[in-house]
Length: 92
Image 1 (tube, helix red, strand yellow):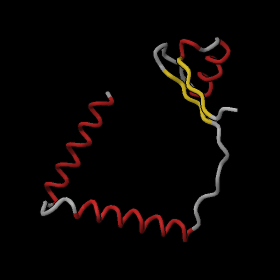
Image 2 (cartoon, rainbow, N blue to C red):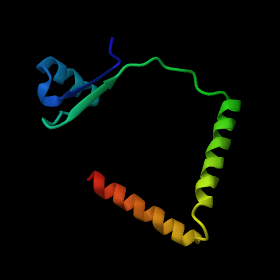
Image 3 (cartoon, one colour):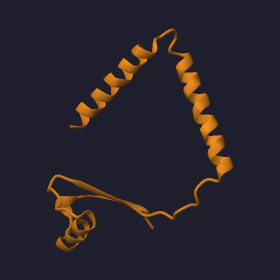
Image 4 (cartoon, rainbow, N blue to C red):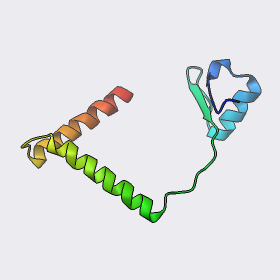
């Protein structure tokens, strides 16, 4: 049995469309795609597991940062700002 489904709004039966619009609290546009996932919830990581994950993320960030070479904090910030601008403009 599938745990994931993707449908175009235009392909939904009227009762399916009405249900999804009620869930979303807004009408669907004809060109929208709907995805639905069903999964069992899992417990949140323990404090010890979260600390381990945090250490892993910091280690990875430091490794990535080490590859940047001698770049100033201002240059790094400008690069991040530019990347965010590009992401925002591509999603509009």
